[in-house]
Length: 79
Image (cartoon, rainbow, N blue to C red; front, side, top):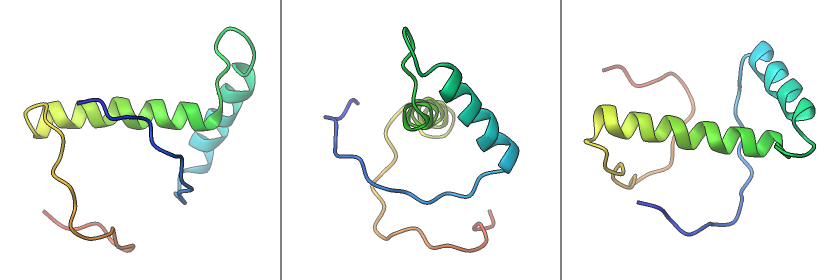
């Protein structure tokens, strides 16, 4: 299901330093024509691709149900 574009919001994430450095390098290298890549664009594309993969793998290709609470920080929930 494709949603209408929504406004961008700020998100704080903690990533491995080497991964963020590599992403920044790619964004700078590909900033001009024809890719015109930004770090935000790279992250958005990566999130969308991974969400599609996870939907196919764990939810029959369907959107995940809406959450009823905000995410909490801390340790991941054990399965």
